[in-house]
Each structure stands twice: as structure tokens, then as C-alpha cells.
Image (cartoon, rainbow, N blue to C red; front, side, top):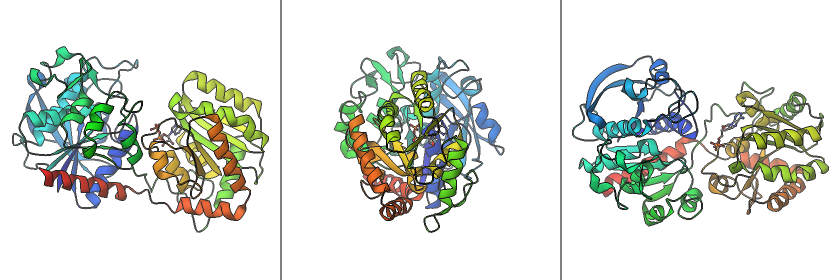
Length: 474
Ligand code: ADP
């Protein structure tokens, strides 16, 4: 089966968030299980520089504003996935990131830039494509390719489309007078179309016109059918719930493997766990904590935003320290949260420590050195850190939401609390500390977590099944 995976970012080429991680891994995993998956990306300078074997293969006409662009073909450096790159210098060759300029302002013509990407994808999936290779399924991701299912529909093409939501908060909302500029027919500006509370929404378009909808965990697929997590899309998502599936993201099992992780001071595995003790001591030393082998060490790594629930952690910090625990926190984000975290660490020298900033190597060492991992997110579409924690034997304590609920098993691989409140978190912490005090039970729990399978192969099989189903339905 042939699938075209349309995305606005992919590691190792360009990244602003989780979409890039998925795009960097999933197409390769689909290829491993026999799907001829190819990726379509905008020709940002970063992409043109990083892909060394790009050659022009076609000219694409009929793009919004009567635009013509070159289509280049090459291979993604890490995974070897075949890439199509939409080379449109007027749209993509500019300083800054994929969505914002160097001052953090959205590019003023984002609607047009991503309408180009969406229309190019639809053309490649239609009989009008200049390529011999023609996908049987079009897989779109987030708002940036949300118009593709709409264009495909208006072109009368028979290829089914899939729309995956990685982040429902970004909806690609633009004024309604752009319709004409984007080559969209006036009649599609309707509740039964691209209209969204008086504006035009790229994401809404995708959610309305795609054959199948997916998001990144089964629980999140349920949660977004209601307020507040539906973020305005709950009505449409509930109406289309028979077409909506949650498929958990995988993790990069080569990069996140405690038995071969070059960032660590010692290697360990489920069968030979003793290296973890060395990692703990090294982390205590690195972060200026008292080197006590038996102090339960809690780790936390997160963007410091309201979503991640750091305020809950700060509320239980005094209690944790009073119970002899230690706390290491890594992250960056809202200044007020950063300050509060710093203040807390300063209050407890030797027992609490933080690093405000982004540090990949330290994030690996925290997973390896921690006994427990805190993830009290208010909502979490999938979440990666809890999966890394399970793999690294840092028993996770998580709020029962989205992907956290789907990956951590209460009392078996970790601790799950129902309400995003300090009280509910504290009760889970107490359950965890009681278990920690029982060395045999604790080892069993760590082992159970380390044995969980969060491979991309598993996710890829889920997507492949949906591709087949969408194709059969057509
Ligand atoms: P989100 O995508 O909402 O930020 P996830 O848990 O899905 O949350 O993924 C976060 C990713 O970013 C993880 O790989 C995590 O380790 C990493 N990360 C977040 N903040 C930092 C930081 N300050 N330093 C290093 N890695 C970080």
C-alpha cells in the first residue's frame, strides 16, 4: 500500500514540537511493516540544507494564488524515508522557524503558506498529479495540512484521507475573506465545511472532510469529544466519533535505551538493573543533592506551563522533603513557574535541585537516576516522558488523563491519581512511598514498567489497519 504522509515538521530536519518526533519516526515504522510511505514537507531552508540528495522531479501548478512550485525528491537522513519537498521560495525561504519569524511573530501569510502545502498534497493524491507514484491514502497532520482533505474532496479525488490531531490547541484560524485567496469555493464556508465560529479553520476543515480521524492516545480521543479538552471542536468530534481512533505514539527505542545510552554514567537493563544505582548517585552529585542511596529520588522534566501541573508538585514539595525524599526538576517556560521552582529548590539545599533550561543529556540522566517520576499534567494528549520513565525504571506518578492514563497502570507499573489536585497527587505520592519502602515489591514494579512495549512498530500497525479500513470503505 502507498501512503503520502504530509507534515510541516519532522526530526532530524526541523522541529518545534511533538509532531516532528512522530513525523521522524512513524513513516519509517510504516515502511518497516511493508507500507510504501513517503513524506511531503515544505522546502524550508533547514530542510533544503539537511537533505543532501534532493533533485527536481516535477513542477506543480494550480496552487493557491495561481502559484507554481518545484517538487523535489530525496531521502530523510535518519530514517531513509523517501521525501517530497515543496520548493516554493516565496513561501518557505525566509529566516526564523516554520511558523514564526525571528521575533516570535507568526508569519503574516501562514494561511497561504500552508494552503500551498495542503493543495500540493491533494494534487499528488489526485489524477492531476505529475508523478507516476500515486498514494492510495493521504495522511494529514495538524492544521498545517488540514485543508488537504477539503481540496481532495473538491477535486473529486477518490483517495481516502486521514487526519491526525497532535495538538488540538492549534487550529489554524484565519479571517473568512481569505477563502478566495486560498482557492476555496464560497459554498464551503459553512458549518458543514470549513467555517468555524465565523472564521475559517484549517483544522476544522480536516476534521470535517477527512475519512478517518486519529489522535495520539485512546483516552484523549474520548476526552476531546467533550468540553473543556475539545477546545471548541467537541461537537464535530462527537458527531464523527465512529471515525475517530486514538493510537498511542511510540518512543525512539534506540535513543531511549538505558543499556546503550551514552549520556549515562552507567548502563543497566531490566535483567541487570544494578547500574541504575550508579546513575542515581551520579545524578545526586551532579545536582548537588546529598548522596544518599536510600532517599527516594523524584524526577520531573517538563515545559513549565500550566498544562504540566507544576503548581501541584510545588504544593506537595514540603511534604515530600519532610518524608526524606529528594526532588530534581528540569524545564523551562513561564517565568513565574520557573521562579517558584527555583525558590523551592533554594529552600531545600541538598534535598531539592532544579535546572532551568533545555538540556537533553540531563533529561536522560534524570530518567536514569530517579526512582520515581512526577507527571501531574492537567491534560496530556500522549506524553513521552512517562514512557521514557517506565523504560528507565523511574516509576511514574501521573494524573489520569489522555496518554498518561493509557500508559501507566495503577499499582502495577506506576501510580495514577484521579483529580488534578494537590490532595489527589499527595495520596498517590503516599502510595508510592509505601511501596518504595518494600524493596522486593518496588523491584517488581520497576521491572513491570521496564518490560512495557512502546515501540513505533505497534503504533504503525494501528495506522496501517486504519489505512486499510479507509481504503475498503471507499
Ligand atoms: P510536550 O510535547 O507537551 O512538551 P511530552 O512529554 O510529550 O510533552 O514531550 C516532551 C519532550 O521534551 C520529552 O522528550 C522531554 O524529555 C523533552 N523536554 C521537555 N523539556 C525539556 C528540557 N527542559 N530539557 C530537555 N528535554 C526536555
